[in-house]
Amino acid sequence: MTMKHLLQALVFSLLSFCLFAGDGSDIADLQQKAGNGDIDAQWKLARCYSKGTGVAKDDRKAFEWFMKVAEKEDVYGQCTIGLMYWEGIGVEKDDKKAFEWFSRAAEQGHVEALFYLGACHERGIGASQDERMAFQFYRKAAELGHARAQYNIGMSYQNGRGVEKDYVKAVEWLRKSAEKGTDRAQRELGLCYGKGKGVAVDRQKAFEWFEKAAGQGDEDALIQMACYHFGAAGFETNSAKAMSCLETAAEKGSVLARLYSACAYFNGYCILVDECDDSIVVGMASADTDKSIRYARMGIGAQMREIRYISALLLMAGYCKKGDLKEALGTAREFPAIFLMTVLGYSALMSGFVLLMAILFWIYAKSRMGHGEGGPWCLFDFFSLFLLLAPFAFVSQAVLLLPLHFLTNGIIQMMLMFGFGILFFAIVIRRRGAYFRDAFALRTASAKTLLIWTLIFFVCMISLEVLYSWGCGVFGIKLKPQAIAGLFTSKSLSGFQFAFVYVAGSFAIPVMEELIFRGIVYQSLKTMMRPWIAIAISSAVFASMHMSLSFFMPLFVMGAIFAYSFEKTKSIYVPICLHCCNNAVMLAVIIIMH
Image (cartoon, rainbow, N blue to C red):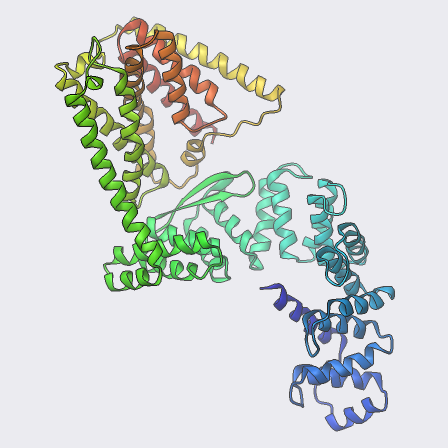
């Protein structure tokens, strides 16, 4: 609902409150009494003209009769005239006159007029914009029990508008408004409990307030309820309820909910952000191309260009997935820029990647840069690896679009990307006359060696974890959990997907990462620099690839231990063993804790 519609509704609700309950009075009799100065008759006649009851609806005549009432110092009439000037109902819109009539009603203590004077000062309507003055008028209205004014006071304390920030007072006023049924206040109170602003963190109470706001149709609260029903914050997963919340918000006009719904029904999974802790929430949805098309079609009407374009892309993809090329081409004609960008983007990705492969193979075949420097590896291999993997990540993401859980899709993509890199360099080193086993140092290590290095690794990492957490606490640094932890415990994984993620994350991915980061990256760097420099650079690359700023230092140390164990034992089985043990234990701890 726009502000204009809201104000019109308030005008007529105010009229309904102020005026007579029945509509059966004789119009001629009313007109005679009103003409003789009877204020009650003037009220009723004004209402008849404003509603079209017994006479043709005429806002201008309604305004004239309300003005007669207002000029007799009737506070309800004065506030009504102020609202009619504000919205231009039956009279030309005039902000200054609206402010004047609100002021006259407010002088007599009219609570609605006090609220609108606050709104005038807040927005600079008919008066100078002054947040402090706005706060004062809102405060007066709030103390008289005005629910929306209480909400505004709470938000003023929360955001420091016209008053110093005070989260405790914000909660106090938001609660008063929420208990009177204000949906926005209920939603904000839910956020306060979810984020611990002004109150202790209590996700159950947050859930309860969001549920109340969602029950009244608040769009943002409905999206947050979808997060909860997808398993956020440990709540029971119910994908059907989650999607119902999103669809309700979408039907009420939320452009974000429309985009989320279109994506969810297209891919078979939904990615949301929990507003309370900014964590990623991933939920499963039954893939439904027809519903995806429906919500994408609704989304292309959004004012935000980004949402409109993404919705158009989903709409074209949905029609293509359904096999309806005629509609896909129709959407392409409707959004030619998106269609052209998509075609050119895919073509550029594929042709660019093929061209890059051809150039690299030519360099390895003809140039000295592609030759091993006294062994199977050279520094050029280090650069080639990232020249390949970066575009391959985009190509695989664009081509696959697997309708799987976000986490399983990401792991499959990572395995394909790392697997492609290993295969490429297996071909390269074979052309150099070396063997995979020798190039990647696949030499056996004794059980004693593996046990010693495992003990060293866990002692070092546990000590580092304790010190790192303590240091972050001392400096007030809040560690943000890795995304995989939230995704793994989001309760949206099926039994098979859960097992797949655990096995792949504990064994397949660590093996591939060690072959890439220690087998290729570290050994390539070591050909042209001292081992300790190669260890530092390869560990920094390893930590950066995990894209977790909070845990960069622990990941760097972990990578350094892996590389050092490899340097000392000359067997890549040692860092592979350490990496697999670490991931298996880490995922097991996450499962136990949640």
